[in-house]
Image (cartoon, rainbow over all chains, first blue to last red; front, side):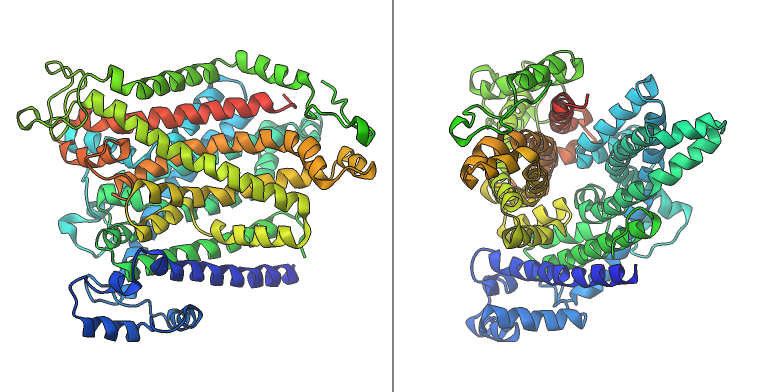
Amino acid sequence: MLLYILRRVLYAVPIALAVSLLCFLLVHIAPGDPVNAIVPADAPQAVVEQIRAEYGLDKPLPVQFGLWLLKVVQGDLGRSLATGRAVTEDLAIAVRNTLRLSLVAALIGFTFGTLLGAVAGLFRGTWVDRLAVGLAAAGVSVPHYWLGMVLVILFSVLIPALPAMGAGPGGSGDWVWDIAHMRHLVLPAITLSVIPMGIVTRTLRGIVAEIMNQDFVNTLRGKGLRRGGILLHVAKNAAPGTLAVMGLQLGYLMGGSILVETVFSWPGTGFLLNSAIFQRDIPVLQGTILVLALFFVTLNLLVDLLQTALDPRIKRA
Amino acid sequence: MSTTTSLGASPAAAPRRPAASPGYWQGVWRRLRHDRVTLACAAVLLLMLFAILAAPLIAPADPYQTSMIRRLKPVGFGNHLLGTDELGRDMLTRLLYGGRLSWFLGITPVVIAFGIGGTLGIIAGFAGGWVNMLIMRVTDVFYAFPSVLLAVAISGALGAGVFNAILSLTLVFIPQIIRVAESTTTSVRALDYVEAARGSGAGALTIVRVHVLPNVLGPIFVYATSLISVSMIIASGLSFLGLGTKPPEAEWGLMLNTLRSAIYSQPVIAMLPGLCIFVTSMAFNLVSDGLRAAMDVRN
């Protein structure tokens, strides 16, 4: 087991390096001279040369990657072209905001997904099952940025009950877990929760239905175990697979919230990415994507380890 | 449905016909014919495809004709069946034309990724060894990014444009298709009849053509169809972020973005482009589900 953990962690290192390489190359796939992506087009030649030397852009690519990586490891992601602030400074706030939104969305999505999926799997072929399957299909098919707009129209415009924009009253950046701030969280979190809801419903329905067909369930029934007791056994067997899917979904929520954050002006990583794209602020773009991708790699690793720990049938070492 | 194909056949008598017996596809069709949801969704998609292809013939107006005095008129205003947008252009016309680009942006990346990813995956699965290692480890790296993030990253670096949007989405889907193609091919490669064909002296190319392709293309294809819905949502999402098509082009995601300012004055009109994306994506999803169920022999 320990050997497996060690091997799995070691395997994540080259992946993380390759992910960093891809993020590094983002600057270079941008059309034109990478310096032009960093300095404004009307900058004098002397400034251009200075920046070129400062960023090491006059050196060969592998050397540049090495220098960049060295800085990244020390927590230096460069400076924003638009604001001049360190990328990490803005990113730290944005990551917290996105994490907050994603976790609440995950909580909503996973709760409803688990309920729907379990009920659908237990009562396969009934109207409850069909309803759950339909909701799940709608959840994974809906363009969530559009759903966000629909919710704004319903609950902010037609019935002015909830705020449509920002992360708090007065647009302040400081988050507090009070009613005024949580009201801002409701609509974006619901919007973001429909995809994990759909995916968890589909997965769990399949898993539960498969377990119910296994011999041991019949045996349990045969020895006279009541419904609740059987359910407990089913839940124990369905947990590892479901948790794995949930872990991945949390990662997708973090990386995929850009569209929903744009709709609700939620000051998270997606919002940061969006403004970086508009201003062609490449250091911010690069830094944000790197942090989100590395987060996803770590999460994948944790899910894998957790699943191995939970499921005694998986013997990997 | 027995699969009485090719086992022990001599190389000379190697069957020209694919390994799947004719009864298989008849069975798939029979199951599909009784699946009302799938049929209804397929009908919706066909109808929509017909409408957007015939847009120049059936659209009531010019998609680029703006009008300052007719901005944001409600559904049924004058001869504007679905009202007008923020620049006074006929919504029905824009939705019809917009569908062309949205469908194109959604389907093209999946088709290209099916070709490239399918080929690479089958090669990886069939060759095994270091070829498999190489292809699959590179795939792992792309897999380390959530799809939306990868698409936004590549599009954001390359800049807006239809070509860049298609390129970034294709790069998102290739690794996903490679994984499915590789695992399907690996499992087919281990089957007895492939062993038998190899034992009777069939070359690698012959085995791939006669024994592997007919058995793996179906599952890879079904998986690819399930990606169309995701592709459409992300493609329109890129346009929504200003990374796909550029104004004044008509595209559902872009229309949704420019109409965002109208959610207070004309909420119904502002919702229409998103509704189109939703209906299309849901129909593609359900058709894909139906296909998967119909092609699953265990049913």
